Structures are given as C-alpha cells and as structure tokens.
Image (cartoon, rainbow, N blue to C red; front, top):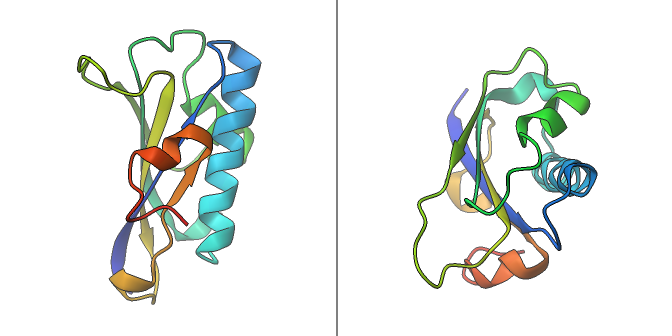
Length: 120
C-alpha cells in the first residue's frame, strides 16, 4: 500500500496544557476522519510546537487518542520573527490507497492562514 504524508496545524488561544491537548486531539481526529484513516493506517507522526508553547508535549494528545504504539516525535518549530504564534503542526505518515492529490490536509482556527492553498 502506498505511503502518504498528511499535514495539519492548529493555532491555540493560550499556552495551557488541557487547551493544547484538546486542540491537538481535535486536529488529529479531523485528519483521521477527513482522510478515512484508522489508527492502524498510521506509520508515524511528527508534531511540532512554536517556541511559545511549553505547557505540554503535543504527543500526549496523540496517546490519549489511542496512538500509544505509533512512533511519535515532538520538536520545536524554528523561531522565525513574525511567525504565527501558538501553533502545533502535524505531519502524519500513513498507508492509504488515496492518491496524493486526494489527501485532505487539515488547518484549524488561525492556522488556516498558514496554507490557504491546502486548508480544507
């Protein structure tokens, strides 16, 4: 089965652990739903957070959704002056029969401004 990358991002209102977790859970759930994916379709997930988000690891949200056996990696986005603040980004590697152009990338809240060309 082909391997594809699915991207997404969400902008948080504030740096608070529970807010981060529920926001990232929402983002990951939307990525799975909009691409008709199940947990077994996931190969790995990379999650990044802007340097102003320090209250929790975004991967904790993935584990809360049942991704405990999926390789997860958290990293910090580079601090670019003028970049959109309080953003968690996701790149999930998945097995799917969908063609690359059929993949639905998910950008929630203010993160839609990051990739208007991809945002659903």
